[in-house]
Length: 477
Ligand code: BES
Ligand code: ZN
Ligand code: ZN
Image (cartoon, rainbow, N blue to C red; front, side):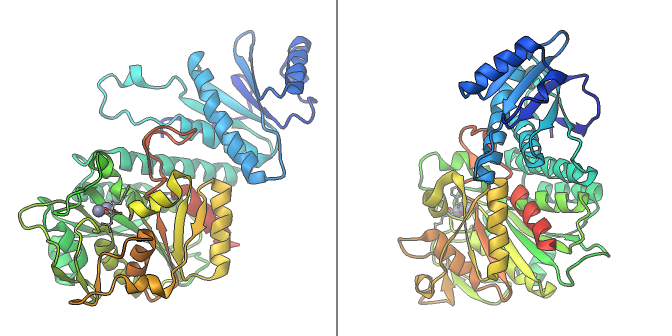
């Protein structure tokens, strides 16, 4: 996270004053009578943001009008904050304090918009300093905000930025072995336990799905286990998160057919970045919940020994799979992680994967198609979290008929469905490897953006981290 985030009682700074515009009782504390006149005239004309250069600092006023849809109000506040970043850059502002004259959810939303919108990935520039945004620090001055709320917000923002970093790292760095090193380091930093299986162990275990995808790679696969098992946990059996960890997807021998699509396939580990980010936030916030994350990591390449269309692979579960397209590799690796999850007798398993182009075509970057058999209470809470974080969810049907398309003539199932609903047939494939309450999230649409959108910067978005952290908090209620 490249923005220092703290709370303060002091008002000696550039100020970002948030108001719902309903009254200006607060204004004499910060503005001159003339400025208040400008503000109230502007409000009548529906002006939404104001800049007042003061003697030493600036006062920015953001109007966040509350509407009947509180989630829309929050998202508009995030977007307004991201817009404000251009002004802060224009005036080369280094530090700003957000002051609340509205509700606390809006303050949090403005903080999210500022910190996430100010995110940059500069690692590979020589002139980092020149490229860096002017804003280095955001402070919160909100009397009603409890210390715990502030800290949780800070952790989730940091973890979202970490997930973005992991996606933005090119494959030349973020390969399977380096991914495991990153996870180990994070485990140490945040306090969750990390176990990594190497290729030998993966072979011994018989994780045929992960190994088949890895056949074309120059680098060995890794199987990564992260565990947060606090003594004060409210659940007896853990929630297991599974992430697709295809560090780079060429499609393998079924080389990617879509023009330019390989240019951004470093994003194919966004599911694993999301689960790592969630573990980081959970451990930093010390949530009283047992949470485990699993990632089978490899790249998918057409190497000399690469798996070929027509191959039959025996997965870790024993289920055999006819490979008809080596580009449908995510499900091969996830099959083994989902089977591994069974030993935890989990209360709930959620997997996150940039699994299909079909999911991205279905609702684009504006949401996440999800599916599975978890109970309706869980789904309801998730959907609420989706609105609250603006990482919105759309449930897809898992009707039996979709499963017919992955029947094989030579093996138990095949890794390719029919012409339609590719994201659902992929989900039906995964279902074979589950025997617990389970949900699958296909994040191929929102995981990676080709251009900036509000506070979602170009490339990795860190999608899933805010969503699931919010959900886990509701899950505790
Ligand atoms: N990694 C891709 C899916 C993807 C698409 C991720 C766009 C991010 C953005 C996945 O491995 C894939 O290639 N899926 C194929 C499956 C097909 C061959 C059944 C697809 O969706 O085309
Ligand atoms: Zn693929
Ligand atoms: Zn893939």
